[in-house]
Amino acid sequence: MTDSTATPDLTATPGQTVGPFYGYALPYDHDSELVPPGSARAVQLTGTVFDGAGDPVPDAILEIWQPDENGEVVRASGSLRRNGFTFTGFGRAAVDPEGEFSFSTVNPGPTEEGKAPFISVVIFARGLLNRLFTRIYLPEDTAALAADPLLSSLEESERNRLIATRGADGSLRFDIRLQGAEETPFLRFPSHED
Amino acid sequence: MSPQQNTDTDESTEAFTSPVVIDQAVKGPDDAAESQATLSAEIADIESQHKQDVAAGKKAETQPRLNYAPYRSSILRHPTKDPRHTDPETIELFSPAFGHRDIGTLESDLTIQADGEPIGERIRVTGRVLDGEGRPVRNQLVEIWQANSAGRYIHKRDQHPAPIDPNFTGVGRTLTGDDGSYSFTTIKPGPYPWKNHHNAWRPAHIHFSLFGSEFTQRMITQMYFPGDPLFALDPIYQSITDQKARDRLVATYDHNITEHEFLMGYNWDIVLTGANRTWMEEEDDD
Image 1 (cartoon, rainbow over the protein chains, first blue to last red):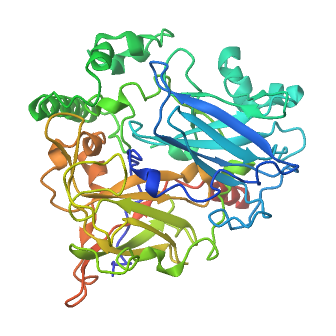
Image 2 (image 1 turned 45 degrees about the vertical axis):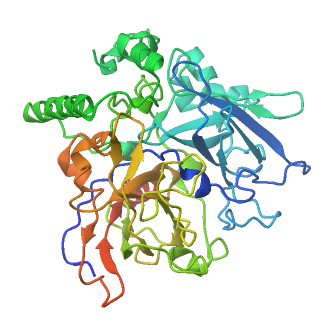
């Protein structure tokens, strides 16, 4: 096979757009249901993906990855074939024709005492040449939000764009704007440096 | 009038009021009216500017530009603000776990998913998934999807006049081994026509979706085949402005993978962005 003695090129492989045709490949049964919808612990997380003209993006696909209610990072497999009982922390949702996504999940807990709980998000879309990362923070723990290193590095308007809105029914709303005055803050981690 | 220059003020609305963007909004991305020559000239301009920048001491780019106007659909879908430099926190330093309960063992062979044999050139694509330190990414999910040998996707939005192969869906999944290796048996995809501009054709490619040991390493990309005559013409491939970086998406023909009277073999190794968690642990060991 390959010559294992050769020094491999360890520059990261470039990303490419997910393209328009992921729809028969990436989605799977119950992909967006980290917990069964309607179950006692279920929280609906919804939002719309918008482009720079303010139009909904009908061909985006999102993934979320989060700790459970106690802030535990779950190490269980089974995200692709859900058994209805195991919380794996991972979900995937293609947006609908109006650009809206919906997950059934739980409120993440803080992974450490005093930390602001958030859901990690990655966004792919036709027309988007590489993935985008962001975070969805829960709105409740205002002291933890104020102490959060990322949020406190942002201007207030940008900061608010990373905090979900809580509905009266306990649901969370988080819109994603790929471009424009209300653009969602996207993240770059140290490992992404060239 | 490149929209790239629109990030210097807080008036990020410029990004969608610039003449370039308005022009596109009026014409629409699916008109397929512009010529390949127009697109190729734009591609060449951007590449030559990048070459000059590198010659002047700038670092060569390793990832695609998000703002790459020759790919018309990117014009309204790229962020105009720089990403926020962020230290990953606990959840981002782990990845979802996938196991054998998630995937059937036959899902890595795209040629046996129907009653009959798919039409086309049978191939194997195999390689390793490594992190930025060269360590194998073990037991992680790799997903692929692709057009059939005629360049047709099984997707209702693909209606171009090429045959659907009833024996080929073009979808596969596998888990990497302990050495980070993966292997798919499939059919070589055909080039695919699209509507970025008139007579636009994508080079043959396989979409790859990859997870690392940390969520920060999550990525989706496309693997290409060596010597494709469409490389120079394709805005998606050319959105990676540096030739050396683009080459990283091209598999290598490997006769040691090729099997007697059975299939042609390609090797493609994938390197994910570095691993923060391991890096911190190593720092702690010092």
